[in-house]
Length: 468
Image 1 (cartoon, rainbow, N blue to C red):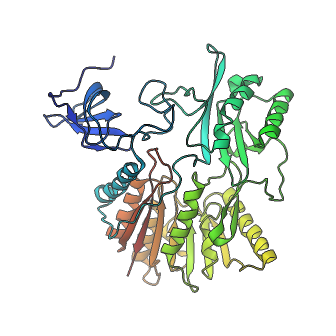
Image 2 (cartoon, rainbow, N blue to C red; image 1 turned 90 degrees about the horizontal axis):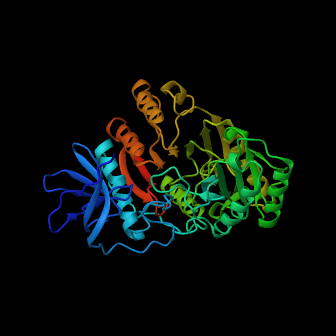
Image 3 (tube, rainbow, N blue to C red; image 1 turned 120 degrees about the vertical axis):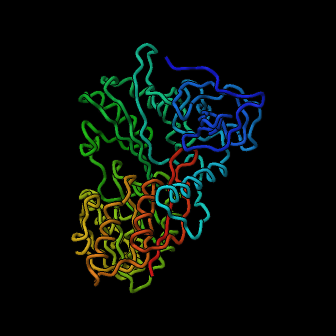
């Protein structure tokens, strides 16, 4: 059984000194032992119910508020909270947005120093966008609760495997939030309602798609119900009977790339980026537009530049860069993503040609496992003036290690003078920055936080590395 005794406190309670990314307040007992307090904010004084004890730390929940923080606010969403059954999709709604950003910025800086021994020369102003109704991608859990005779659809409860009983969501687009109750009714009427564990949401600028994960075949009537829902709510249904590669549309989808297709625009570059619902796209399209423009600005692209976009995905950065440089190479480990990047290049060139706009420059796409790239593999890409790196959470350690190895092996190979690194994990950014700065001779000239996921623990950032 867990220990639920009170943490050691005096008459003034525990003073919360800081906050971690799990939205836990951090305090110290008088004997120096660290106490993590869920629900408490910096500069508050609280009493604590301790649920877990270790030699060097304890963990618990807020019991009584003795002194509240001026940064504490009322949560926007009715389903947010620290109590049992509360939705766990957001962790920081009780903290005002500016303080959330400050916490995340500090996490980026602390990771750079403590993991990579890197101090940026300049801390950039955080990139911000809408903090509500922003989430254009989400994975919603589905559960048919037999005892309650109803279907639940939403995020998991806080620190639980159960699905939160939510009928709206403040971070999903309004049109998706409004469909949560109709989706419940739809799934409840399916013959396989006990075999549908999740629905993935993918929103484009004008269209919305749902991917239904189902562990048993759909009946003919199930298909009719999905089609009726699609017609009523103007959404696409895609089916996932097995792994992610098994995703297919319920019915034929218009392949002419019309307004009904999934796409997002990059208006600063006159681009439309088409995607499938199971492709990776940024969760916050408004921030993505700003991030792309900012990254391209940081690249300081000149007409004579030869660039590489590592982990290029659908061409989110490749195509904008190609409107400014004479040559861009997009490199990606997934052949499926590369095929769509090539199609985006083709479709946008056709659109530009029809509009007599400036055509995209020379673009090459190459498939490469970037988690196993070596100095020998890197040499084949030649010397390029600038790189953009946008890896998944695992980071780009093999790539930066290949760079340092090639520098020591080949005196004729010229490394990029500038690297712009987009990160979705401050720990792996810090690790890779340590290699670039302390071994490869780069300077970390700037770093900044990107608030891609307001109210959550997710931290996105951008860093610039320069080499003489």
